Length: 117
Image: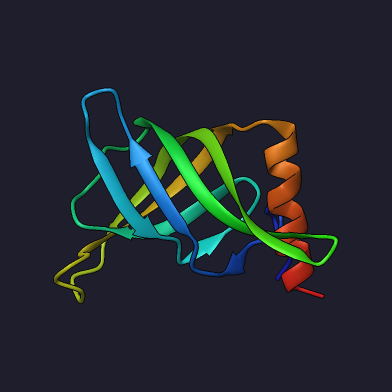
């Protein structure tokens, strides 16, 4: 099967926060992530095509010094699934990062590529 995604996707848990202008916040962890989006469990269904402010915390290493890079961007919900087997997080959502700085996308790509080498 040929991969159709533009960016490599990896299974990795990273902290992610979704917010909207109405003080709605979701704190969870990714199940998988790429430089263009993420998939994660949530405790309530999110509406398709809804735009959220996103924060993802990505581990980075520069000159053997480890730190956390806080990536801020906007994302749009492109899929929501009712998974039924987890009472705490009965849904999973996929979000597309629609507004991310090039430097943040580059940092995310470097992180993902480093883990796949």
